[in-house]
Length: 263
Image (cartoon, rainbow, N blue to C red):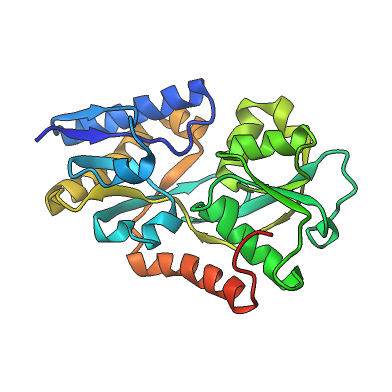
């Protein structure tokens, strides 16, 4: 079997995507499997379930909604970004730089943007933050799905939406790589924290290979410290799957007060 690998989650710009690809290539050279780095040619839910997936990165929400039965956790990155603490991360609540909103509570009746229905950082923690403020299951005047965190930021910057929740790691990369976009928005709060986006492998990958990957992840950081700094990588933690139950807890807390979806 020829293994495949891809890191599709934090490729905010082409230059950053190239950095991730070079780092992944170094990791694979250390493990020495027969593996190809690929661009996913299908929607990610199908790609993550490929039986020959050696390493990729997923979001904790799909992990806890069916994916966990078909993959195993390798490690969770620890990022140097505002809103990160160890292997946990939050989302940044943003509005336009010139908007009147100073807090999420002030956004009642505003327009919200989010990336995907199955995103922890763009939807789930956003829903959790809004839930105590909602009345009869509603808070916003309109909600739009943009398809990506960059899409949500642009929707806010271009006056198509007023507020969004952006993965704090993505937002840090936007500040690094796209400062002109970052200057068009303003932070008005942070969401609750949850375990970060984990690196995963198919359940067919041998345990010895998983251990080799864990060693290579950290070794690839020390051999190229400047690249690690650009990628904001500090290291990796091997979190148990039970830590990701935090994501379900946030979902259940919002549902318990009758706020089942962003509205």
